Amino acid sequence: QVQLVESGGGLVQAGGSLTLSCAASGGTFSSYTMGWFRQAPGKEREFVATILANGGTTYYADSVKGRFTISRDAAKGTVYLQMNSLKSEDTAIYYCAVRTRLTYNLQTAPSYGVWGQGTQVTVSS
Image (cartoon, rainbow, N blue to C red; front, side, top):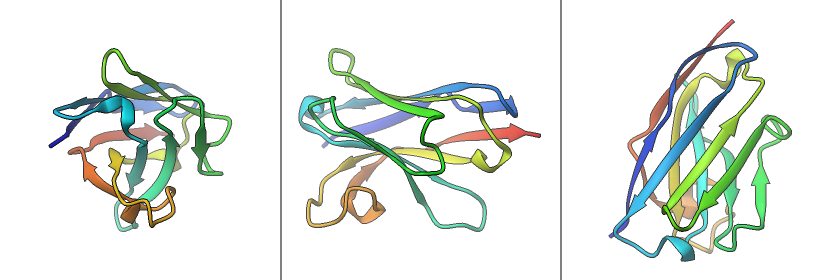
C-alpha cells in the first residue's frame, strides 16, 4: 500500500514563495496520477493541482493558475508544489493524494483514495 508524507509547509508573508514536497513509498510511483488539495478552516477540501503519471500533463484550479506549479521526480518518488505570489487566501492545510478511482473527475477529492497527513501553509498579510 502506498504511503504519502508531505513536507515544506510553514509561515510566509504575502507575495512570498514556498515549495511543498510529497514523498511516496510502498507503491509504483511512476504509474500514479498525483494531486494536491487544500482545506481552509470551515471550508471543504478543494482541488489545487494534479499531474498525470506521464508527468507531461497538468491541471490547475483557476485560483492558483499562473502562480503554482506541480511537478514530479520519478527517481525520487516525489511530487512537488511550487507556490509563488502567495496570498492570504492560500492559507490552508495542503494534502497530496494518489488517484485511485477513475470514475470520478480527477479534479475532485473522491477520485483520490490515498492521502497524506497534510502540511500547514499560513500566509500573513
